[in-house]
Image (cartoon, rainbow, N blue to C red; front, side):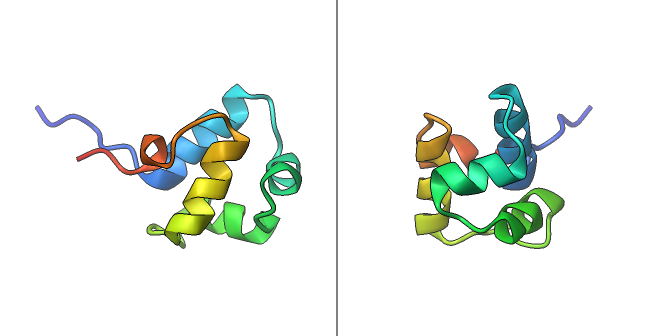
Length: 71
């Protein structure tokens, strides 16, 4: 049986919701546009720029690698 692989978007959404934040609130905290966050979470941007990932992770109290897809 194969284990489900969590994408960057799925991890971002899970962490954001875990912090009780809306996309707009995370956008304000991180300096990343809400539309970009929506695209990442929705899978339209499966490989966000490392700087974007770092900003989002920092705003959530994580390391950027915590948001990378599972291998």
